Amino acid sequence: MLTLSMNTQTILAGMSIGLFVYYVIKRMRYRLPPGPWCIPLVGHYKIYSSPEIHVKIAKLAKEYGPIVRLSAGPQTWVVLNDINSVLEAMVKRKADFAGRPHFASGDMFTEGGKDIALANYSASWKFHRKIAGKALRHYLQGDLLENMIQDNMNKFLDKMAEEKGPFVFKEYVDLMVFHQLYTICFGEKRPVDDPEVKEFIKLDNDLSEKFGAGFFEDIFPYLKNIFTTAKWKVFLVLSEEVLNILRKKFKEHKETFQPGVNRDFIDSMLIAKQEAKDEGDEAVLEILDDTHLVQTISDIFFAGVDTTRFTMDWFVYFMTRFPEFQEKCQEEIDRVVGPHQPSMKDRSKLDYTEACLFESMRLSNVLGLGVPHMTICDSQIGGYDVPKGTTVLINFWALHHDPKQWKDPEQFDPHRFLDENGKMKPIKPESWLPFSAGRRVCLGETLAKPEILLMCANLLKRFEISLPEGVKPNLEYHMQGFGVELPSDYKIVVKERSG
Image 1 (cartoon, one colour):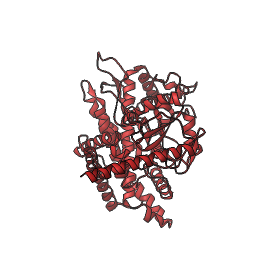
Image 2 (cartoon, one colour; image 1 turned 135 degrees about the vertical axis):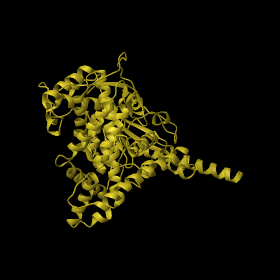
Image 3 (tube, one colour; image 1 turned 120 degrees about the horizontal axis):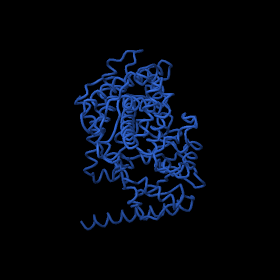
Image 4 (cartoon, one colour; image 1 turned 45 degrees about the horizontal axis):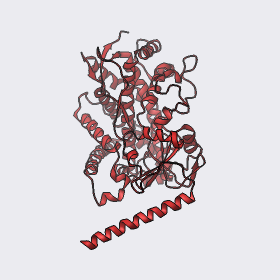
C-alpha cells in the first residue's frame, strides 16, 4: 500500500515537473497573448467553470486587450473578443484556425468526429461539408421549405388561439420548432401532442444541460477511464438514446428511398451522395458511410432546433417588452403581405421585421462563446504567436456588446440594421456574427435565416402579443450551460388580429 502511494506521488510529481518545463519552454519560444496568472494544471477554474464565462472573459479583455490567453486545466485557450482579431483569424488566416480540438464529450456524441460541426479540418471534412451543402441547396429549391413552415405554424397558431389566459410561450415554441425540424429532416407531420416529439424535446433539453455545461472529462480526458463521474454516465446514456432515434429515421429513409424523389433533408443527403457516386467519385463510398450521414442529420437537426427555438423565444420576449416595435412590424407585415399568409417571396420586403430579428440575435446572444476552433499550424493574431494545437474561441457576446461597434449596446434598437430609407443595409455590421465566419461559418445559415423570419412573421401576422395585465416588462435572463443566455421564465397573452 505504501509502495503504491509512493508510485502515485512519483508519477504526479513527474507530470507536474514535465508540464512546468513544457510551459517554460513554450513561453520562451513563443510570444503568447497576455492573460492572468493561474495555478498550473488547475488553470483559471473560476472562469472556465462559470456559466457566465463569456462575460468574465470580456471583462479580462478590458485589462489585457482583445486577445486573451487562459488555461483550462492543462489546456491553453486563446479567446478573441473583438471583430478585428476575429476577422484576422477566421477570414485572413482562415485555414490556420479551421481545426477543431478534441473534447471527450464531443468525440462521444459525434462517434469520433464523424459530423461536420465538430470534426477536425481535413480533406475528408471538406468533401463531407461540400456534399452537405449540396444537399441543402437541393432541399431549398422550390417551395418545399415554405410549405412545411406554413403548415406547421398554422397547426400551432390554432392551438395558441385556444388559450384564454396567460401561458408560457417557450412550451409552444419548443413544440413548434421540433415539429418543424421533424418535417424538414424526416418529412414527418405529426399531431400537436405527439408523444415521440415530446420525448425527443425532453431528451434534447436534458442533453443540452449536460453537454452545454461541459464536463470534467473534457478538461482532463484521461481521467474518464480512471474515475467516471455520474454526470458522464448520464451523458453517455442520453447520447445513445438520441443517436438511436436518428439512426432509425435514416434506416427507414434508405429502405424507402426513390431516386429523384425529394421528401426532406435526409432524402436530399441521399440524392447528393448518389450524384457524387454517379460522377465516378469512388471516395464517396469510403468517406460518406451511414455514420457520417447520420451525424450530418444530427448537426442540421440540433443546430436548427436550438438556434431557432432560442431565437424565437428571445424575439417574442423583446416584442412583449417593446410593443412599439411589435406594432411597427405588424404594420409592415400587413402592408407587404395583405390578407394572405406571409411567404418566402415577401422576405425581401420585410425589412423592419428582419431588423428586429437581427437585433434580437445580437442582444440575446444565444451562444456566448462559439464552438472552439483549433490552430492546425503555428500562426499569429494581433502580433501574438498562436502555436499549433491551441484552442481558439470567439467571444460572440463581446462582439455583440462592443461599445466601439455599437452605440448603446445594451439597448434594443433595430434601426442599427436599417438605412435612411428604412431598408436593410446591403452590408450588415461587421461585428454581427451569430453564424460565425470563415471556413467554419454555420452550414445551416441559409436555411435558418429565412425559416426563422417566416415563423416570426406568421406569428405577428396572426396575434398581438403582450405580457399579462399588471406584469411589468424586464430584460432578465438566466444561464443554461456554457455561456448560453435564455430569457427568464415569462408568460404571454395573445389576441387575434383582424385582417
